[in-house]
Image 1 (cartoon, protein in one colour):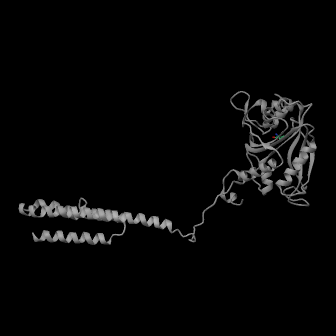
Image 2 (spheres, rainbow, N blue to C red):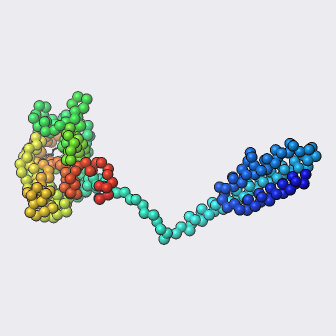
Image 3 (cartoon, helix red, strand yellow):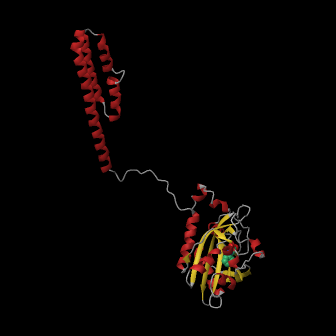
Length: 344
Ligand code: PHE
């Protein structure tokens, strides 16, 4: 009998010792299991009770119950205390934040070069008084061809490898010149606008061609607009883009059904004086086509060509970006390789 009493006292001590040692609320459950779990020390002792005599049961039953209750209470109290302390510590830690402490370096992202380049173009045109316009990528035959003086069966339609859609007369726009017509129909005169967007052509993909590419369209319509206005805008745009105040341009005749006369604009190579690999030793680089808007196109847009004239030009963003950044493969822009992107 004395043995059980000793055991109870001993367990009490052990619990006390264990609880004194504990420093984190996370470990308290282990102690609970050790004493009060299914196979715990106290639980076992209690289940032994059935082997005792009636007298022993009467004497030690309440004592064991008390032991169990005390253990439960003590564990509960200590657990609450520890949780409270831990919460306080957390708050304190936040309050005494050391600003001089070592800060692990964050990996910082940045805009995709294509996005920065697009923004640069936008900024240049906006600074010259042009406003941005937009139009759909899925177009009708009318906006992409007919209204731009390319009627059905006109051989110029062959210039564009068109993605025709299942729906009759619908296509993926082959150029952003469609936006010329949308702007003419929707904007009040005079119009000075530009549009950056996707265009699609059914081409074999290689280092300088993709089935989808970005184009920029520019257009100015007012009274007495001439080619010299186009040349001035093109020159200023290129000077700002390549950050060269004396960058010169030259023009050659070019053909597009929606302009008359049509021109090809070249710029002096911004990278050399006497010829290099970029300008193929010619010191000139072809940059973009343009011209005076054909009277038929003005008419399609609801504008009287007797009263108004205008110029338009259009270029692929990628070619210009490749020139500006010295990139030799168009696919670098789309494949998302960090090694390439991190250079910008
Ligand atoms: N839309 C023509 C193209 O895609 C470019 C262009 C635009 C030419 C405006 C002249 C005037 O190639």
